[in-house]
Image 1 (cartoon, chains in turn red, orange):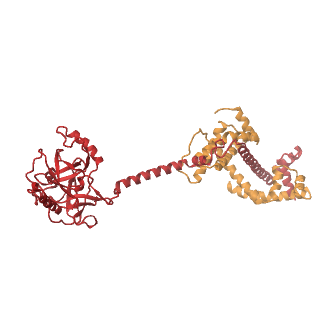
Image 2: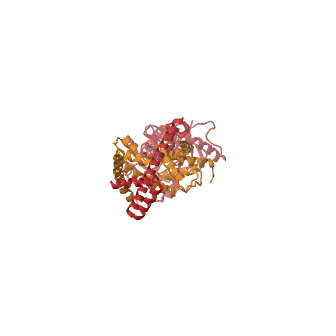
Length: 367
Length: 188
């Protein structure tokens, strides 16, 4: 009971309800009794905290009320803009940084993937095999180029001629007989160009679509027959893995490539062709495929579109068959002599190329 | 450092819990804070919480005797909100975020330290009162906060006389003090 009384006195003292006399009396009591003094201090502190709690609570409620009131009035709104911009805008504001990052990552990824695809994927065509003759678009600029580089002599392509196709051909007889692919000769007339840019008119002597081979004969007074060909045309087959190289005109300049014999048969088991592994491009069609001794073992013709580095070459044996056929039909061609032996055996590749490249021609077929 | 008598009036009003003053400050500044929070991965609710927290800080500052506001209310509130929101983001573990700054700021660290301390004390009292239960809570609030007379309280709570109410109030007060100081002294 005494404690309750003391508490009441303390409350009255702290809330200032005491009379001056009573207050003086109580302060005397505090001075004399440290326990009571301590109780008063503690109680005061406690009341302060009660007070703080109360004011904080009041303020919180007041703020809450303010917020609701202002929202009702439309002074503030969820979007921060005067009421009409929607949820989407808010979401945009919240996530725009993330969106930006995500978008850039997606963009970079997409670019990288498409780049990788462009680099590594084989060019998918409808046909599985791509003939390596150059198409007309490529020839358009070439035509211009020719016009520029050989101004000193009259271009041999008739002015209104429409270039149809292009490829590579090589001599099989020093008198001017060339072999190329039949698919290179889409037009009716041909021009052959040697590696120095000199043009010669050529006649299509024989076309064998089954073998995909054709023989051209240079009929041009500018052409000076060779004494002999440096290379031979091989009659027999070669071994798997044998090193091979080719020269051709995927562009206006002669291009060298090397590889190896991958299979003794060609596309889908075709025994008339080899599968070889090297990099070939449109324009390489009709180019000679040499073994390391400098013997022509085939005529580069097609590549598989779904696989990289899978190229097919018509076996050189077919060239002999073709020449025999030509001799039968054409009396002027009786003197064709296809060389069997190579004169560049054992020479360094550089020298082999230097001697061979004169015999490899760019073919332009036109109508 | 603009001294604006209009702002002084507003602050005085805030210190006295004047509804009009609170509304005015609220209206003038909330949008800015909202824009800031929304721009920095916050939500509307985050903005409201942070802004009200800052208002409490301003209130406490306005109430203190040594109060001098050396900047505009707007700048002060923005500074506090910015600080609070950075802290909140750090607690959420989003260290990598760069908080967009589009306004000048004043140092508010000291005020916030004080504010944090009061927040903690407030939470202790809140918990203590919460675990005290009824009718003790209401009884003590009626006496100490609403400053009601003991006989009034006795009538309102249904005690037969003021003495019984006084007796009950004493018991409640002792329990509350025990609860409060148990936490409070640990906090110290």
